[in-house]
Length: 224
Image (tube, rainbow, N blue to C red; front, side):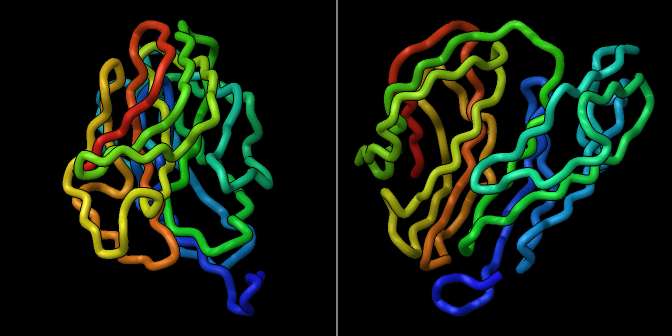
């Protein structure tokens, strides 16, 4: 596939983030020039460790199966096909390799890809985000003005993919990231520190832990 300027498009996934039951596990990224990208995610219902010791190894509740109801990918990607198809129940100690084929963006892209494994319904809180604001060196920039309403798991993870050039410039360096209460910064993709070294855009994924209660107001991300 070629872009509007005659060159073959390039997709650079800086990291693949697997979201499951309120936690995020990070896998290595990849580069591709294909219009459809195939990902293989080894998934093991492992009960004796809560660490990501192998690609796609997660902790489950002791001795209990995990029921995957749905699998979603973050924008600007979209799903072409998944094998095995959801719903899938994975018994304690069992392993499944998910083969996920996604449409690449129709333009050059550098940034993260998040794959969400949705499980059985759990207790959720209602979050209303009026605006998303990025604070860089004390200056606040509104990066998303459309109000959003989310129902997320208590203390679950919200993923914010932010185009840093809305507030920063080529060559700037990010060394730390935080978020205003009642949210908590869990991690970023790519990991800090990072230098904005791509001229056309730099998208960073912020993995933000939601509060354990409902919230209405701004989401303020602080970087320095």
